[in-house]
Length: 276
Ligand code: ZN
Image (cartoon, rainbow, N blue to C red):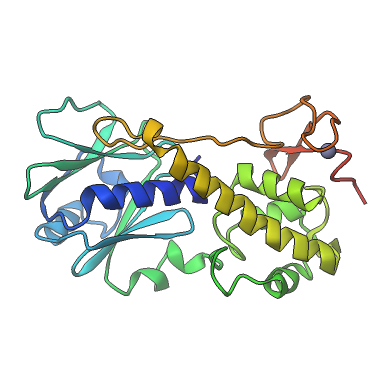
């Protein structure tokens, strides 16, 4: 599943491909993907004539900023955007096609059809679901050590579970939670409220650093993931614990262990991240 760094990389790449393009028509092959408005015909009519002014991001959502509307798109597990010409062969997994005045088209493909699109009047998107429930952005000024401390002061949940829920800070998924906790030296099963002030401080720092490094890795490796049609795939930079079960820790050579926390596969170094 794409996490914040991947979505940010998709955002930056897509923006270069579709900025200032004007939509002439939209073809929706899988109406269930369109969550707002609930009438797909209306979704299509509202988009006709709209120009893509910008693409923003909120958590793992892409925000296509149009003249009068904002299209909120979540890629979920397998969603992909690509810029094509109408003559390019279409895969059977292409479910939404935005045609532009210059003849090109933006295609949304999704093997598992879990992706979602919501269209809101500009300015209304942040007050409505799904964006309304989101916590702060990790690179915003609102993301502070104190925010983490206060949000988790009374929680009995594991720190990993608390970080995954997106209600305090957004953008961390299974991969980067494990990586950030590793760098902060915090065991993923620690009760969130049990962290010391110093540990909250380290965690806050490592969340930002881990995500920033991943975004930079995405930016540098982007050429190999954007094919001729501009289709953007996933990238993977070097990870320290995630997916490295039984392999030696990069810091201390201890074998990385894998467990399950809150139903999610979780990797950690038992030496660098001791249990209390
Ligand atoms: Zn270690």
